[in-house]
Image (cartoon, rainbow, N blue to C red; front, side, top):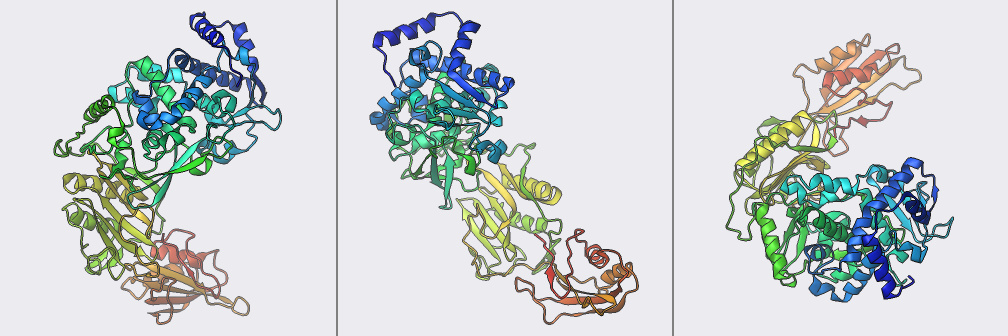
Length: 637
């Protein structure tokens, strides 16, 4: 970047600060710096211009004010000043250079920026509503200029000024939540300009270019998970990194962006927007509410930081669509957080007050365990259960539906027990030696149960706490999400620090599990109704259709009459048999118990034989397939 004499810089800054609002002619002249506008409609052009205008006051703030590296915003988004000293000159240069990309400055530099709305790299089309708001290139293939392409998501983003006006007078928690001031058109503009080397003062070296950082962090099961460094919480995690923190925050566009936005927002609303709360080592909040995501991080005594495996990753952009800088970003691993002694006492005092405001305490012995609010409703997530999801499973004491099995887990876990489940074969274990279930203690009072309900599926129950909250939360999830809404997962965050409950159906040893791994080769599971069908006619000389159905864990107590009665509706049924099956095994190794076979005339309606089986057994229409000479099993999951 061309450097100006100091007196000219001062003159331009002071002139701008004192100047009257720009005239329409001055604005039109200024906007000649934005060129080409490929496929941008007039409405889109206006939205792009308004987004740029909205960050001029943010930029001007840093023309008028130096950076305080001991401010809460700098400590939380750029890193502890004690650890970023060697990077502070570059950070200051990037923010100050960025601040000059506004009226009164670009006349000196005569820089132009190529604007597009036609998605030349096809990032917008690929990702839709989970993709980027915009993306940037240092050199457009058409013009050779630096370029920003604005995606449809940008045009649906709110305005920064509207966010500030609305939340300035909101309730204290919403007013203090930085999430409410992010992902505006101004946020997008500030972020994307940071990627452009001439706008951020980058000199072409690898560590001066401002890109998009992604980091990995182990969860409480020891699995590495990827996090994009976008949004307040994830950027606070990046800035807590104990290893070379300044290296990473000085190269991350959103670290600069949210630092600048939070600093400016503080000047407009009168308080620092400190939520989501970022944990500190050796501060162990209990009974914490209102942390807005910070409660999902567990910190051990040695500073090791882990993400709660039962909590969803906080992200606004899908993983495959994360990078908005065409250099494809940079990765780092976060294992430990910076120690508490790296932060100034003034910040630690502020943090303890924020913690107290959120209902927490730095003394593990303080605080009252809050009851679950009576109107608290579960979140029913995941996918719909298969319409053929089994009615029940074979237990040692009879048949039990999924709801009943979950209530048996609930009866144990909410009493603080984590060993056996009534009616489930085997002994306690993690998993049990016969592979039917697992029981894993979670902390002092929590438990995870998992029962294998198919060769590759498990029914699970997770609770961090016992007691009345456990009873209330899990009953709501079981009845609402599993029984009524037929979803494969339901969860509730309790009102106390780290309190979480979840139930559902997932793949065996699936994501989020805390128990020991079920052996891969062990297909043992609780028995349920299984069905397979084939046609027995030869399709050539036979003048009839033949059907054979093999079943396990089903018997109507009337020699299969239920199936036969439905088959007769198709036409004249002959050669009916209902016998013990001695040869067939299902794909998971379960032996067939009974078979039914019969013949029907060729004049029957389409799929009449299959429909008879579906209606007799209560299966979803279209789920039974009877192929000639080949067994087909009915999918239940």
